Length: 482
Image (cartoon, rainbow, N blue to C red):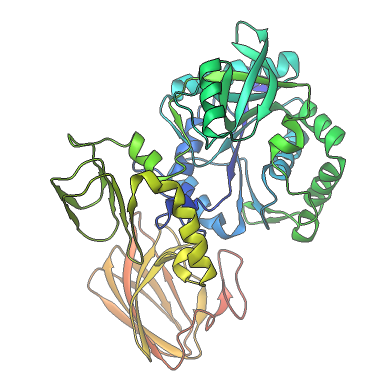
């Protein structure tokens, strides 16, 4: 494959994944979680298209709030993105994909992009690569907007459907799209399954950027104009492209299907058998996880007796079960979910209730993620707070001071490089240091393993806004922090 034929991957990292609460929450959603193995979902998405012989470097479109976490996850996966584009707010998929197409078109006007969600499971990556080659051929040869469709194996009402039209290319097993269909009721889904010419719409697209932008201009000229203006007013922020929020906010909020695919006569579909799942619920995760002889799928420290058909996630402690059947149990350090597996799709309504009651557990985890790593509060009182701090290899916190608190650090594992006033010190495990109130200080991890520190804060005010930053690797210097 020549350089001109390489596909530009575009990975969309939006959404909160509320049906996988309490593991997936808006502050740290499912695509950033390792649901299937050691890698997170977005790392898996990037690694599937990491072959330099077939793909260019990926463009990732994500929330500003997740930028440093995603950058760090790409670094640890050995992926160097073409760009990480920061959306100031969600406007659905069509504006995001249009932005990506404009970025690629500026580099390669005849380029082809492949658009993926960041939170799907694909078991057969070799089959995916082969289908992407086929789709790239169709996109270039026929100037077609190609969507992938999975053959349904059950009458599922959770997915939209695509009806196959006339054969476009026998070599690539590609068809014209006769029509897109919204999520059906059960009887209609059963009819689609029996018909044999309907596929699940799995939200993966292969698009020649020139033809795609022509179709956006044809059907959504306002959207294209706003996206062009947004990019023209965007700014580079470290290794990110920060979209102009005021301009992007005026873009019509539409999915790619609504904005273009359902209206164009250039839509084509390639059936794929890639062992795909959108992992849209705990029941879906149970389906694809390895199970014991009693059909139980477990993650973490779990002990079950006389139990069957359960999904058990132990996030922070032992979970033991006796006589359980077809249940979902998900334990984290701040919330516990228990429900019948058959009602897995109802988690979203539960999260909506938590949000209505203004419960922070609806959107936040116990761990708070920062560009350099994360911290977790595990004890607090009126004038004290105890944190576990984890600093990523090579990462550095800002040079800062606090006006209302002092801190005592104890190194648990790793090596710490500390700036305290005019001093610089290196600390090993079991060594500690005291940071007086009002003193400039900085904590760094010079090693290649995570640095773990226990921090004891004491003072009259312990809020996170009591930070004055003087120097920061992440552009946050100023009177208060994120």
